[in-house]
Length: 135
Image 1 (cartoon, rainbow, N blue to C red):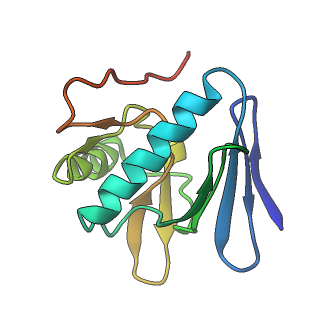
Image 2: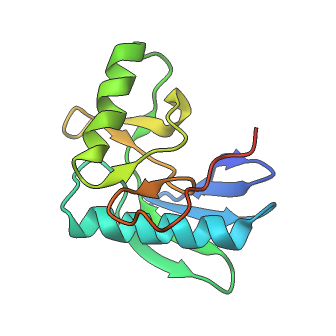
């Protein structure tokens, strides 16, 4: 298994089988876990083709397993980044952490994808407060 990232907020590992395991930790870990699982289920139900698929989630361990959406993107113009994040809004989701670190490139179909939805907001759930990343 290859390590994707190891930060205060999460440990991410990419398996040789193409699955990504993310373990939430740190401040508000349970809340961020619940939000990301909810958003991924919402996006899958809406047929969004450029986000990870949720294979499993374990609330007791704050662990989820998703599909791999390709490799990290090192350079992408700001206008193109804005287009990608705006495209999510057609699926009823706003990425509250809209940075290059949350964009990947999937070689199989030549598609830019978006990852990391722990701070996302579902637009059709106006009563739910948005989670904003800590600075």
